[in-house]
Length: 278
Image 1: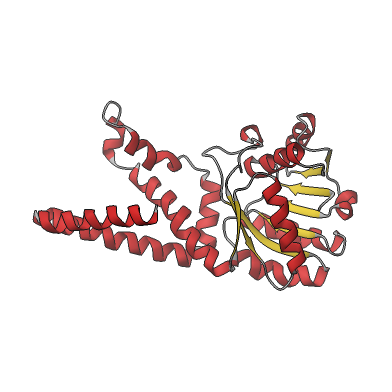
Image 2: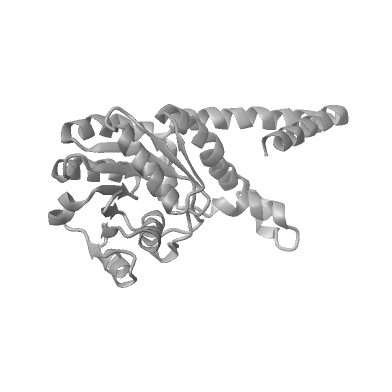
């Protein structure tokens, strides 16, 4: 198991990861953040043992990156040559092919073992102040092995994340990840953001309940992060947007035509699919 873990990026995800590691393992945790004030706060709060410096990079057995996609690439391309040989590196970015295309060969050249990662957890808030050690409890941790990561590294990560409280780990390819996340996560954020733009939203108070809250919750997003994620995964996401538009047009057509039988059939199909899929 890993003795020293370095976390780069101490926002919601990185901060929560640091807190979980400190609470549930004996690992020494080093923390780096673009704003040093945040790293100092994390140290004062006990989420990390020390603020990471360039001199401490070679001491890390495991490096976890909690930055935006391009910032993750930039940070790792600079840091990889200074990491010790055999170090395991994993990101927490919600797109994978974009990162793999830019980091796989660099990891091979540097002699580090890079694994793409994506913890399926989060909140509609951002920043270290909202971090919590239980954020990942019961969640799925997706792992994307590649040419730079051996089986030993992937197995070590599986044991590590299960020890932090994750409910399961899932291995997949970068392409499979990006197609599924376009459907299960990114599309939901696009739909929520579009839905809340109805002129009727201004008068929702007194007329809304659980359905409204459920559908609008993730419209409260970090637009800087999500716009970058959407564009890094544009192909699969546009495919999913096209698919939901096709189905919405089916509903619009039968409602406009007053065709109750066809509408009932569409609604029945949706209900049965949800019951079957859970």
